[in-house]
Length: 131
Image (cartoon, rainbow, N blue to C red; front, top):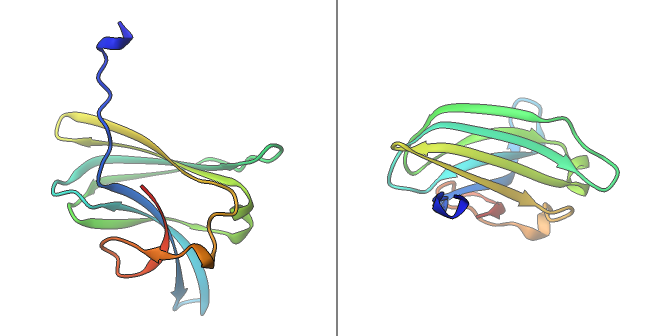
């Protein structure tokens, strides 16, 4: 029975953590974004984030986006630098047409840092990207 279940592969959807200036508080903040680099809109995007290590676990954060237009991005959350010492997961589920997609993006501990910055698609900024 399990072999009959088709699990579609997620492509063109990424999660990035970007270091950017906050005009309101005059600080450098790390923010997580979801990026839709596809040519189609994504519907009912659900994102569940958490952090963990061998002896620590963060609370679970949930975010819902009714629609993420094609070739666009949306902010998920602010991430405190203390959490970079943990593995940070972003479980993303969405509909593309009538098909549901699901993928877990993992930022391994200590991989979010200024030395790991790279160009982020669609955003014209540098950050840490998981495909």
